[in-house]
Image (cartoon, rainbow, N blue to C red; front, side):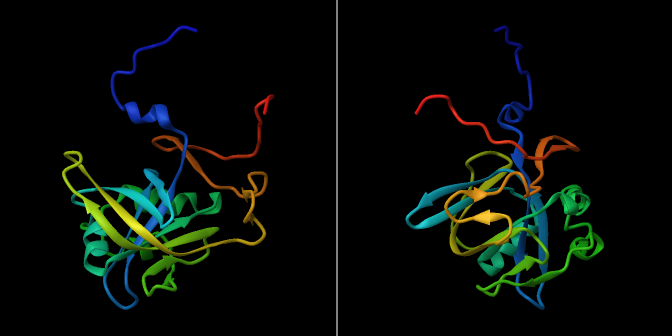
Length: 187
């Protein structure tokens, strides 16, 4: 195999990755939504998840104020909305959820979430790791509850990748969809 040297945007070596809409706020109060693909589980017991946020993110400021956020798993039918909230700053357009055509509703913890998604994780902020990088803070959240479409998700196997059209960001505006499962030939 011959390799090329990757000069910048090294993170693209870790793509494609699922792209989500992260929401923060409480019903009736200020809210923020953003696109995020740098999301990962960090612990099973207790269940925790981490989101990488730009330090100056409008949504991060609201999450810090409310202490909660949701990770919303969108389908390909919401790709335009996902792209919109990922390319517009909430500081410049505080009503970007509405302008993107998203309906925000209350989650079980009292935070907000996006209505009509394939699933969502409801989290309370456990810890914010600042100054890990110059441009990003890592927010670790305790998972309060998580929900998924009963037609698309199996608790034992996870998402049905043949039916759940979860967009995976390749780079920039390029996305792909899952649709095939492969297994190693040996156990």
